[in-house]
Length: 293
Image (tube, rainbow, N blue to C red; front, side, top):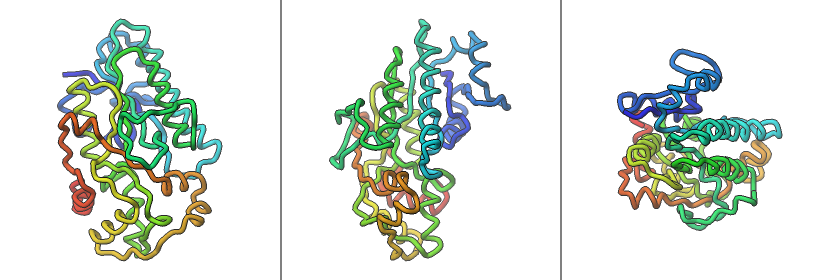
């Protein structure tokens, strides 16, 4: 049984991963505070035997980018929460003979065009078109300093019934105020939480390296998503929110997260014959409504 060190262990994805695979791995959960079942960085650094036993590092640290407007202070928090933890991982393991498999999170915000992006898309790490690109490019650049086996996972927007972005997206519909954002033409790559967790397990079990897009194969724009939500929950969807209002209410965060259009393919997972349980949006929405996702 592999020993898996998880950073960001109190977060939404990490908590779900530990719950789903409790019998498959021995987990070492890193936290800023000493709590039951968790260890701090200081505690880890003092335990050389524990460090030596680690087979995999699952780097999921990073504060939520979509829970509040992006003030300059908030931007610094978003960046530092990702970069500092990744730096600590590299400093801890690069000097050791045994280097565990690092699986480091990133996001599809690294892509800057509306062409279909896969893992072969060339990335210019020296140029930041917007803050979403800066987060992901600096995060990946840091992870790329690791000298051991390394996997970069670019997550889409995670859909489930009990956390992540979707409950917030659904709320206007339940209030009878659902509708498209902007003109509805923008694409937003998504992935069901169950598939994301299984993809991480797949990468660990098969010791996959390199870049992986963790998104569903089904690409839908905001207008199509809006129609499917309204259909699944039997709600209206006529309350469109124009671009100018999104910019007023949410600032730069709203413009980048709600209005930018990105198309992303999980080509490497497809090539590896990974089995998506929720390959299309309609099946995921039905599962969310039934509380099975």
